[in-house]
Each structure stands twice: as C-alpha cells, then as structure tokens.
Length: 211
Image (cartoon, rainbow, N blue to C red; front, side, top):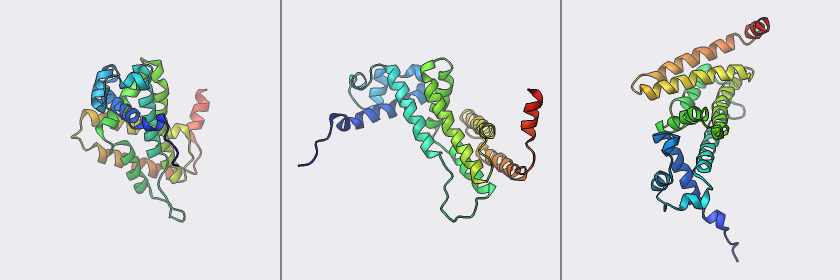
C-alpha cells in the first residue's frame, strides 16, 4: 500500500504560491502593499488561505523574503567549474559576476532592494536582509576564490557594493548600458586583484595606522 501523503505535503503548492506571490507584491508595491487580498489574488487562492498557513501578514512577509534570499544564495553560491578545468580568466569571472548582479528579472531586483530598505524600519526584516546581502557576498567570494584570491570579507563587500550600486542604477535608468560598464569595471578590478595578489596588503597597513 502506498504511503499516505501528509496534509502538510499536500498543501505545499498553495503555501509556496503564497510565498512567491508575496515577493512579487513586495517588489511591485513595497512591504506596505502586502495585504491578504493582494497576495491571495496574485496567488489565485481564496482570501482565507493566508490565515490558514501564517499567523500574521508579517510572518508571511518574513518567510517569503527569507525563502527568496535563500533561493538567490543557491543561485550565487559558487563559480561553475569542473574538476581538471583550467583556472578561469578575469574576463570569464567578470561575465559570470555580471550575470549574477545585473542580468536578473526586474521583480527580483526590486524585491531585493525593498528588503534592504524596509529592514531599516522593520527589525523583523533584519534576518531576510542579512540573508539577501549574504547571497551577493557569496557570489563575490566565489569570484575572488576562482581567481586564487583570498576570500577576504572586506574585498567581497567592496565588490558587492559595486554590484548593488549598478543594480540600483539599472532600476532607475534601465536604458543605460550599465551591464557593459559594470562588466568592464569588474574585469579591471579582477585583473588588478591578480596583479596585487603577492604584494603587501596596503589596506591592512592603513587600517592599522588609523587604529
């Protein structure tokens, strides 16, 4: 006799539909626009469905944004390489890095920035905001590591800041050729990273001097 499917498993498609719909509403209307009606209409489920799966609209928002951040983290976790492959060039890594930061759907980018902005006003969103930032820093660390550079938090944060800045510009001015400019900037930085790999860490010295 086949094993019976649990009620939780049977209901997963609706729950996942609500989570996905919540992220889309956040992207389009901001966190303040996430209501029972807006989410259920987007998900195509009855109005009472949110209350069935979540204790509050805040819990739905938090879980939706955490799921979104985890999904982004999985997409950006590591530079693709097969055993025995030649080390990638800065140009190859810059192309991969550009795809991770700029060549993503507008709704995903909007949702990400909404998480960051809203977390400054809503402490309950601090967790999702941290996870989302961590996803992008993982991509920066993976890129640096693929070039043989140390996975330094300061460097990965700097590359992340550059990517997020260009991502924000692309939202405001989607017609600009920012993808090309970002690629060129990241490529040059990766080349510089390789050239300075064996040099003394001037940044660490400066930090020590200021301390």
